[in-house]
Image (cartoon, rainbow over all chains, first blue to last red; front, side, top):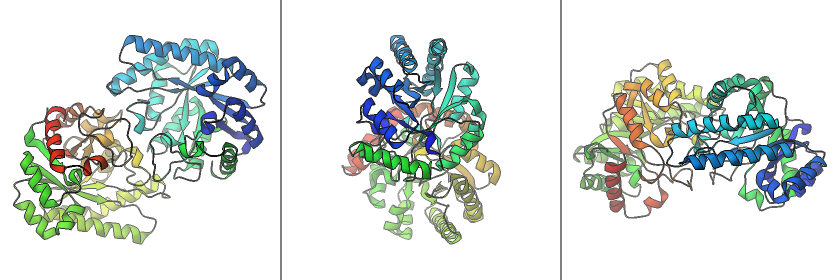
Length: 270
Length: 270
């Protein structure tokens, strides 16, 4: 049972809402926090969005997303670094302590190369992030996204990467949707310890009808969310519990009702 | 470049074909081997199917599939053992040296429990398999199948399991579709060594439109098949290269044309 004071919602969970609507809707539901996606901040305008958030009473838990480092050419990879520096600045502008990194993958670039390019990319933007006071959170993505979204697919990889790059300015985002299957999950969460700066929940639907946008509400799937949360808390994490649900089916319905359902299930199933 | 003499096709690749049609179609294409799925053998009748295969000139590389060990109750798990003993006998009847195990997973059974039930189930049927001269091949399945098809999701798990159960009568089936994303793949293939008794190829389509039946023809996706094959061969594997493509889109077309396309791509992309 998660306490409602820890409820944080990703703006992508209510994708059709503007940032303003999300802020109002989450407050009305009693949520304590918000994680902001770039498409919602940029639609609002960064300065205006930052004011909306500052006045909202909501804690900004994070900003999504940086990353997508791999590229076929040096100029593509360099452009990715520029985009990441902008994202770091935007995170700082809205007071987000964390920028979540979806590290990237490109069909045709071997995974080993992509993984090296990711480590190089993070190393390159780390000084900018440190200067801005924004922690870069490496998020391992489910292996079904290895082809085109992230070549970082296990918590073990994220831990290895931080072992190599150093802890300062770096952390890890753990999403139960991406990691629940991993036989090494409990051990790697313990290993991650204080590196865990972000914890995302949703559920795995059966059958999964769409590889991207068919995540389920907590309790409508088979992920042992509370068990994984207990491991994360045993590792020392005391931050918000972030609800991040990509759901084509929910995005077309009434978003306020959707947020009510999230709030209810958060208490019973997260 | 794979030599055509190593081409083996799974009957599920040409799902609409009967066993008889598959035998004729694969021979016409110059394939050397066939891996038989239970639905095709049982439709033909085991005795009749065994005769068809014996007269075919094709090498029977394997039989699919045993497994699905986890269950909520002892009687469900016991029924699974009975089904596996039948599958072992059917494999022996058609001269298949290998029975491929899709180990199973059941929503609501925690993965740790499912994994223990799988190890217990394999241990229980192993004497029967040894007596029949059929090697049980543990096949790690992609993590996107952890909810309902297999709780064995990495080659590392399969290796650990055989470390615990002993090598006699056990082996591993490596399918590039299930394993290509794994950062430990090359190392775990080397560790598996002579345990590798079955090697399956297909490709990962972008975008993947269906989680089950949208595998691509070799070369139509992003898996470095030849690289993975080189690792498997460095580990000592010299067996057939089995084409196993679940594809709703291909199953509705002309199967002889589909087998021709497979043959062509096998030489250039497997």
